[in-house]
Length: 267
Image (cartoon, rainbow, N blue to C red):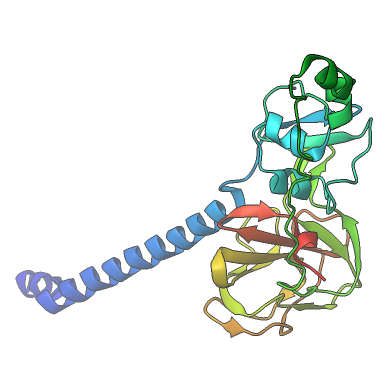
């Protein structure tokens, strides 16, 4: 009798196979979740600037010369400092240089007449050719204000860039709690939950050409991973979840995982 009970309790080959299949599926599901969480973490922290210095603009220094001296892309310097026009920097202004470890000397720009001085007189007297110099480039800054639409109607209360000594990878837009949060452009939802610490309820939308947009601190997410949305579709309700000091939307634009200034892409 004991032997029969023992045999009856012994799992069959089918039961063992089913159990193994369930464990495999569970492992795959855990791996998939871990993989998605890892991707989100890579999106949020990968390629992000972690250091830099503040350069004080001196007389004759241009944004182009400053960026060149520090070997940093002028577009990146412009976006971190919210400079849409490279000619609009002033002596005494402090400009954040992303990625720089120390302050460097920047040679001021000198107009051709400052360099040649009395060269024309010397040229006539001595017969040598005066040094010629073309006008220095101002540096090209690209604005793509057609690319994305505003995700919510409100006021920007915190800009992109350095904030109290810490990097801020997006902009904060204040609006009434529960306001509609809209997709800034057509794309696919690749994340929609509250699993990332500090961001609260967050939606990540993947677009063409390596762009993604991030919508955080939502009261409620109205989409799920895998959904395809159009520009202007309601994807969430504005809230105060995560590390937030009041109702607002934290909005980020990233290109190939690198944070970009949203104001350079909004109308």
